[in-house]
Length: 176
Length: 78
Image (tube, rainbow over all chains, first blue to last red; front, side, top):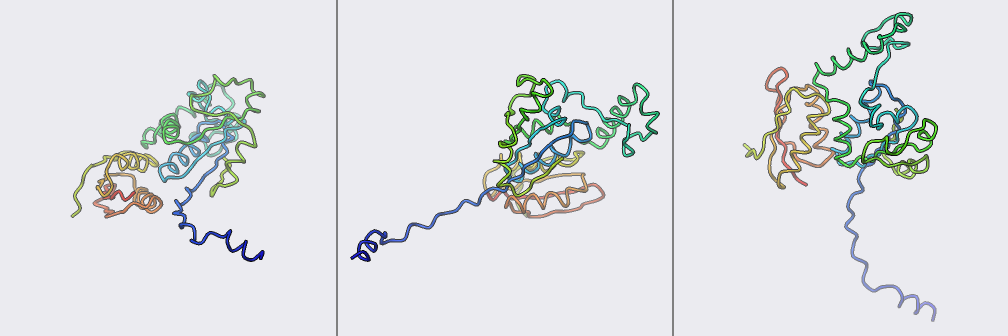
């Protein structure tokens, strides 16, 4: 009797096979540094991943928040202090002289320009145009006194849980 | 010889711009149309094929015509 009922409740025809759209690959990046040299890798990889049809989110935390700060992201710098790989490697005591950070930054920008590397802002714009989610860390904003209107258009605000919700299904996860 | 429907001049651009511009140009084509990409970035010999493989487009050809002179033909499949 029970068997009959169960048999009846099972649909006679098998459900149509689900045409599975392959799930897009996903990349999650944490950008935690705010210097000119550290600004490039997140936007280079994010824009390229978007061009490769991946879903991308970048979580900007601590100094990384500068990369989506309207004003600060326009004047990112690279320091020669404690940075033997700097464009202009100098002893730390020389790097401390006023103007040395400006000079190292100028040199790096010049080298990047000579090698025809796109500007950071240009790459960041391409990220936004191609659907890369940019999440500003709310806690960092509170710590550093950054307001939502200080950040560029198109970014979201969130915390650790917002990032993890996206990153839990990521194929690639990078901390930069 | 595949008929070229659009040419992208990505010469004098560094990574990742050739791939980013190729993506944008290919999206403007119809399915089955062919994009010609000209590039000078030596990395593009590895990167353009990696991009077509990942996105399921057809790389018809990848030629190194000289030092820093690369030409690719990509057919849009999706």
